[in-house]
Length: 290
Length: 68
Ligand code: SF4
Ligand code: SF4
Ligand code: SF4
Image (cartoon, rainbow over all chains, first blue to last red; front, top):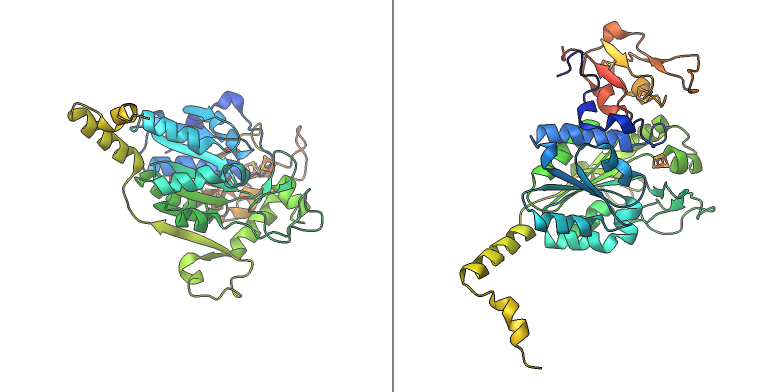
């Protein structure tokens, strides 16, 4: 795979002139970049046919380093923009990079409705359990009792279980892994890219700068070891009680099923109406007498 | 052959910790950026599994040759 002139395995896909990245040392975002490329190669997709869409946050800066078409959009809205891209050109492979704050707080509604529609997008949500870019505020996925700059006495709230949430909302492929599982994560992203429908891959990731520092896990290595130790695969977890699962991270596939995909259904409808000569549904709105 | 791009490495130590063959060791000295660079001191043990290159968040590692 590597010849002498090539250098790093993934460098050809990256905008070398912009590197090193802005991410802190040991931030999980860089690992997600690698696993994405690994998955893209396994799924035999071409970067030229991929459009990346992101919102706001540290992880949303990822597309800016990658040699493909990309949109860096407004906070929480990447799925809405990505829906537009997909419907304008259903042939495109549309990938969303988002964080827990972006996807689950301000963008929570777009997330569940994207899943409900089952539109063919691959959403990679890098969940570091905190707002990194803005200084360590508690996010909707911060574990109960964890510390942040807005929770000096520990978070009181119960966090969202994103994989369960998006699965319940109707996504056809949902998985959760951590940055300490790069091979399983690559495989899940591959499945997400191949799935014709809404795919959601939650990556539990480390933000050593804020989450780590505020929660007494100073190094990225400490955080990754912790994630690995807390992880338990879904198959096993399904047989355990709630008490046994307290504080555990459930990883694996949460949904893998099929149902009609939105952009395809829409194209079919448009085709059918155009063949009939009169797009009745559109006209009728004008015909109605008020 | 393992090559390390010193301009890209941020010294996070993920490679040192997660290489299954313990090929890397953190250098004692700081480099010009103030980073303890990893050094592949046990390179002869490397199985070329490429896990370090997959996990390095800063794309600093190149492992040449195929898996043995
Ligand atoms: S603040 Fe946290 S999430 Fe943001 S780049 Fe630094 S480590 Fe990564
Ligand atoms: S290729 Fe594998 S064995 Fe060799 S240094 Fe990297 S992680 Fe270690
Ligand atoms: S994982 Fe990469 S950035 Fe981190 S110490 Fe190793 S070579 Fe440097």
